[in-house]
Each structure stands twice: as structure tokens, then as C-alpha cells.
Amino acid sequence: PETPYAAVYPYNHVYYSESGHAIEVDDTPGAERLHLYHRSGTFTEYHPEGTLVEKCMAEKYEISIGSHFIGTSKKFSVEATESIRMKAGAEAVVEAIGPVALQGASVSLKAGKVFVGSEENTVSSGITVISGDVVIAGNVTIAGTHTVLGRQDIIGVSNVAGTLHSPFPIAPLEPELDEEALAELLLKAEQAE
Image: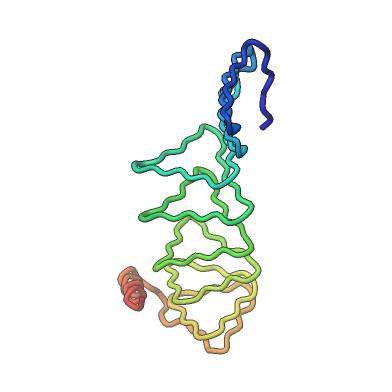
């Protein structure tokens, strides 16, 4: 934001150091400011309505030995012209009351296990690649063309609306899958990891 500088004598009190640092206490009515200026151009400025502006001309570090909390009653934005990296030594949780969107040229998920649970899941992209074993407990509806490169075993009922291509025969192994059989299947999938 632009500086609200509108100093009027004799309300602005400025201290300048020999190397070019400045401390400014401006009591001009309606334009009250505090300004701490480093000769490199780095500064901290408090505006009349309480806005705080910090500009760092080099690298900036914030180090907390204890916990660190950031809170706002409005929007919170983090932007970088290069990369952003977040790392946690333990659990990392992202929560939102509204939708959560991940958007990029590609999105990678890498984990020992990935769990997806919701009332409804939709995967939509040009190409979706899943590498490794996939266990789906519940109903799966595929609308459109479905191509299987490799073996596909269907346990239970499979409904495909569209075209199904596979180099291997696809046949249901069991007509129904009760809770005990499902638990056994999930246990085998976990042991296979």
C-alpha cells in the first residue's frame, strides 16, 4: 500500500543516524505514523488506522522457540514468484468450511497410504494415473471409455456405462461381497504393502 505520509511541522519527529537509518514518530493530526527505516530500504511502518507494513529488501527470518500462531478475521494470502515449501515434523492438517482446491500443472500425492473419504468423490482430468494396488470398498460407476492395461479382478457387481477395453477376460469372482469377505480383502491389501 501507499504510505500515508503527510507530515506537518512541528508534529513530525525524526531521528537520523550517521549511516542513514531513520526513526520517525509522526503526530500530524489524521496522518499519525511510526516509521522505522533501515538504510538498505528495509522498513516497518504503522499507518494512522493501524495498518502495519513491513518491507524487507533481502531475506527475512522468523524464529519461534515456542509455538507460533497467525490469525486473521478476514483473508490470508501467501504468494511467491518462485516456489513455496511447507514442512512439518509431525502431523499437518488443512481444514476448511468451504471447498479446498489444489491447482497446478500436475498434482502429486506421495504417502505410505492415501485415504479418500467423502459423500461423493469425483476425479476429473485428461489422464489420471494410479500406480500400485487400489482397493475400492463400495460402488464404482464409470461413465465413458474404460481401458484396462493388465489384469482386473472384479469382486461383486460391476456396472460400466460406456465402453470397456481390456486385454484380459473380466469376470466377476463372486456375486456378493459380505462384510466378513470385505474385511478379509482389505486385510490382504494392507498385508501386501
